[in-house]
Image 1: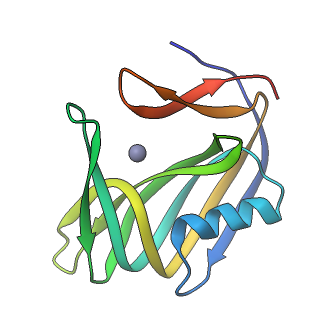
Image 2: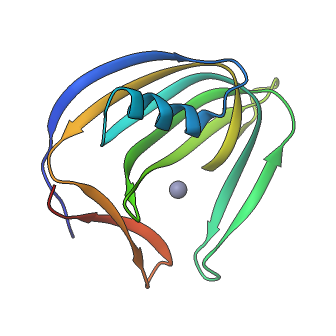
Image 3: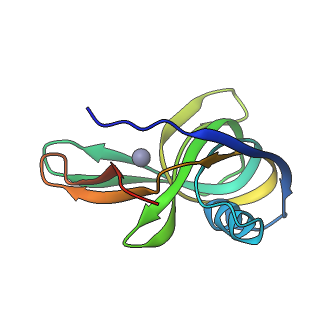
Length: 144
Ligand code: ZN
C-alpha cells in the first residue's frame, strides 16, 4: 500500500458555468487558482452525461450514455497529474426524474447548474502511473 500525508490548502466554492464541460471546468478553475492537487465534490444538475464501468477482466471501460437531464446526486473526484499534465478523476451518482440513480466513472457531462467544493492539497506531487495488474493509471507518490 502506498500513501502520503498532505496538508490542507485553500478551500474553494465555485459555481460552474451553464453549458460548460464538467471535468474541463474543474481543471480550468484549478489552473486559474494555481491548484495542483485537490479533492472535490460537486452538486447540481447536468444536461447530459457519459459514465463508464471498468471491466476488470477485459481492462476496458464500458460506456453508458445519457442524452437527458440528470441531477448530480453526488460527484466526487481528485486532481493529480498524468504524464505530467493536470488530470481529474471523477465519479458521479446521477438521478433521473423518478429518482432512479446511475453511477460510475464520469467520462463527461454538460453542466446545467453545478456547485464545486474544492479542497487544495499541499505536499508531494500526486502523479498517476500505468499499473499492469489493473490496466489503470493509479496514484504514485513522487517528489514535488
Ligand atoms: Zn474512475
